[in-house]
Length: 127
View: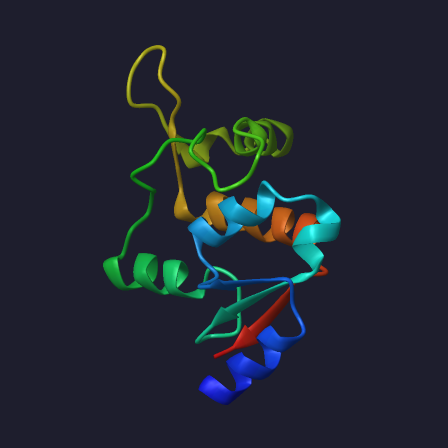
């Protein structure tokens, strides 16, 4: 609980409470070195746990946001991921000229891949 958070924060330059999309957005705007000196504090001790739990509880198949609304510095990264892996069927097009809405599954896969590549050195503490 609180003692674990205090102990973890005594050794970090930046503490971020919550491991969701907002946290990933903040971390992605930091240099890799600075991000790795941060600690993320979340009750689950895992990345995007609350987000995933909410999507499952609601039975959501697709996000409400488009493929360009990702919590990372590269707004086109998810679109490239979908294109590269041939997962266009996981995107619902909402209209001509607009980015599509990704499935929860493809969004989760992309986030897991990006988190592992970019934030593997960031500590996530349960607290």
